[in-house]
Amino acid sequence: MKAWTRLLQAASALAIVLASSVPTAAAAAAAAVEPGFVRSQAPGPISIPLRQHVPQRSELEHGPAGIRPRGRSRSSKEEVVHWANTHRMHLRQKYRLPDSSSPLRRDPQFDPTALTSPAKAEVRMSNYRHDSSWIARVQIGTPPRSYNLLVDTGSSDCWLGAEKFQLSNSTTFLQTPNAIFDVQYGSGNVSGIMGHDVVRMGSGDVTFVSEKQAIAVASKITSSLSTSPQVAGIMGFAFESLAGVDAPPFWLQANISERRFGIYLQRQLTSLLNVSPDIFAPGGTLTLGGINSSLFVAGSENAVEVLERSYWLVLLDGLSAGNQQVNLSGQQRAAIDTGTTLIGGPDEVIAEMYSKIPGAEPMADAPGYYTYPCSARDIRASMAFGGKWYTLPDIDFVGDIASDDLSSCMGAFFGLGTLPTDNLQWIVGGAFLKNTYTIFDAGTGSGDDAKAQVIFAALAPGLNSGTHASDVGADGLATSPGVSRYVAGFFVARVAFLAVVVSGFI
Image (tube, rainbow, N blue to C red; front, side, top):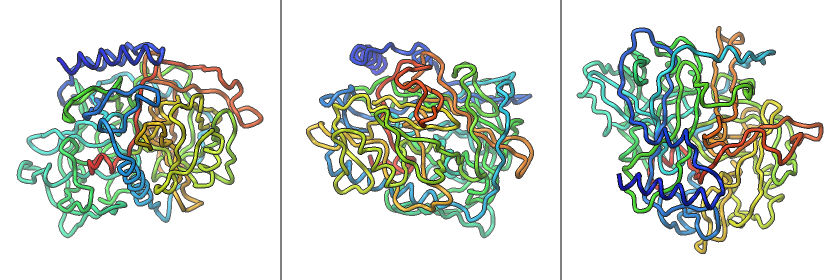
């Protein structure tokens, strides 16, 4: 109760500083109690509310004297540089694109009525380390045991650390003979055995079940990739072509009638003072087998074609900063990735973007990253998808503090380095996705007939949307820059990557 009292007090103070109101819907979600998993007789769509994990850190404010580094009250400049370099390496290793893919045709006409769903159940997800990443409770084995798994639309496997998942605890786990699981990350690898077991995900009166879900149990986790006390592993939500276990991911394997899911990544309302890192706070909603229409503005849906059935790849139409357009040469393919909270892109494009921000300069000892004055306002970093511009609030542009005197901030956009120009140029994570309700729709049919889409929608009033959507004009910029079509209260946010969460080295 003392922690929640501090939360409410801090939220009120922050609301005054930012001149924005506390979202009532978010406050209600924060007070909700996580329901248990119950098997449904007639499974329907499942909404999985996320909770947020809060580490020990000082209260954040939007100002050079108040922002604190992620996950602790203070971080040295060297620690920020180490985190930035490792984050970049992890992403480069994670996005080794497959040699072949199945291009999909654009759905010529998007029908919003197809998004309706008759049944829903709310299941909590957790926001780990102050907007670092988002996890969900998943039940595995017989008898079922609950595990915190990171929700990752940038991968397809389900794996857990062997110290978390004891094989002897499940009577239904069956190891796959002569099968080895081996995933390479930037600072090490994860390897172990493969098998299958009963996996359940849901809440309330609806739970989806995969009776023989392929999972990996990692007995060897090298370098900094050891699992943290709060996170047992990863649940992938991309397509089967990426799976190291050579089997469909849970969202395609379980008894889910509709192959789609919606995600709302809730911000932490504010950070807490002197709170144990074992405390969780509300973090948003994952909806399996459908959507939660109460979380977005009706009519704001913007369907964007998925280019390949691998990652959730879509075309990036435009980029701007300070209401100045950034030149994008050639096709810009972007992976929409809930397992990443920074935004990575081509080095030359990122450099041009920061050239439009007064005082920005390359970050020493961290290739691809840039710093800018923490006192900067009206950065208006914007990305265009499907003919719509989405503008981030300035607070989501903060990646971390880059100087010990708290005057210099590290930007959330960074250069990925050399990438295959015909496969992937951008990785778009939570810094963007916190500002939209995002629907991942695999479509119906198979192959080219399965018209997969990523659908962006404006968050409902009272949620943590700090962005707005506007049409792309003839000059490539928003038709009405500076005018917000969909505006709600926003709060302080931080950024990170899934491997950082699993490694726990922040």
